[in-house]
Amino acid sequence: MDILKISAKNEATTLEKNEVADFLVKHLDQYGDTKEDILKCLDYALGNKSHQGGFVLTARDAGKIVGAVVINHTNMKGYIPENILVYIAVDKSQRGKGVGKQLMQEAIKSTQGDIALHVEPDNPAKGLYEKLGFTNKYLEMRLKK
Image 1 (cartoon, helix red, strand yellow):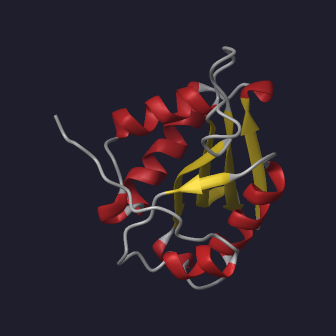
Image 2 (cartoon, rainbow, N blue to C red):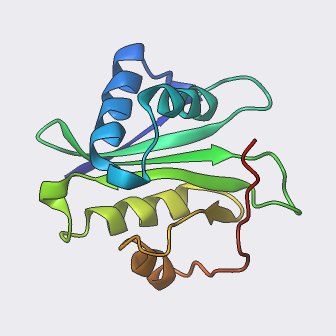
Image 3 (cartoon, rainbow, N blue to C red):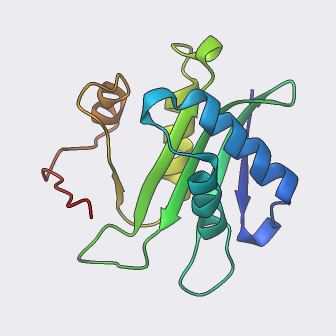
């Protein structure tokens, strides 16, 4: 398995963005978003404007994506973590084989500064995040308008 990093520096093609978005739509299950929203996130992560940034990691086996992580830079050092893990997904056939752990370890190594993420209380990945050192500092509240 190879872990590949895509960033604004190596300019992802539209085909690559669509491949990652399609993978995430399929494998995020009930924790996912629409392809349109995922593509907006990818555009932000891979954008080259001063207020944008981040990266995408893909785990590939024989050229096929088996896992993906999307990190967005917040550009808000100090009062908000500098990075937010927006998406992580592993192909159903590869779960329990350490793919998610490898992706998370590489994402942690590839970032500078703190990382925040949102996880549903019933998401099985919550245990992995805790083992990697993530803590639950706040209760998130949202107002839907």
